[in-house]
Image 1 (cartoon, one colour):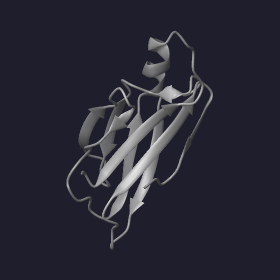
Image 2 (cartoon, rainbow, N blue to C red):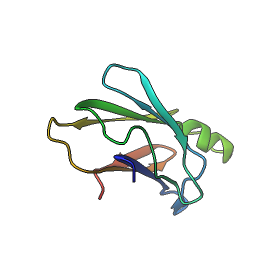
Image 3 (cartoon, rainbow, N blue to C red):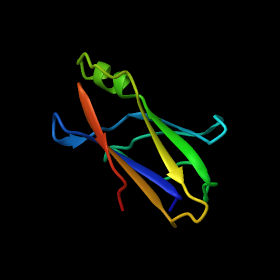
Image 4 (tube, rainbow, N blue to C red):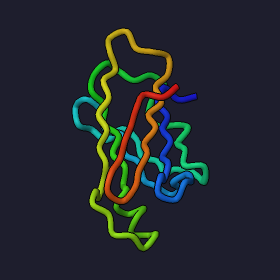
Length: 109
């Protein structure tokens, strides 16, 4: 399993958000990885096996997801910044719950 995984849920329709592009940017602003959520709304491998300490950004192309569904949304993208400490955990899971006008995230397990 990758050091970082994510899961996107469409709370408007009560289902996984498949086909959402995800971009991982490192602490220095360099794009480290890209992926797309699968039919279960998950990305099981994103980035290196071990994340260096610092602030990492996951950017989700939520506007494209809603546009493909024929919905006009307020947020064209969602950027979630997470801090990996100098003593990192073995795994980070970042779920994202979306609807056309709001989003929520948390540290998952």
